Image 1 (tube, rainbow, N blue to C red):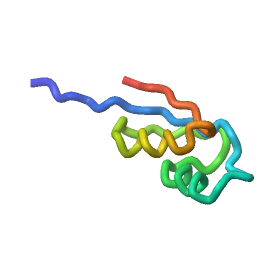
Image 2: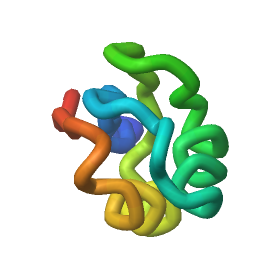
Image 3: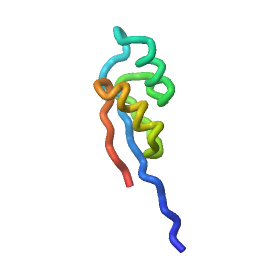
Length: 65
């Protein structure tokens, strides 16, 4: 029996956090994004999608298998 593997999302911080609101900075930090042009990989869940939606103007998202 095959195990289903969850989709992964590669999230890259493409804009600086300076000058943005504290909740946006906190969301980026919760995702593990601390420096510009750094990437993290997370499972594709509704919680992560919601966090991405809050800072969608600051990040680039790629789906990975």
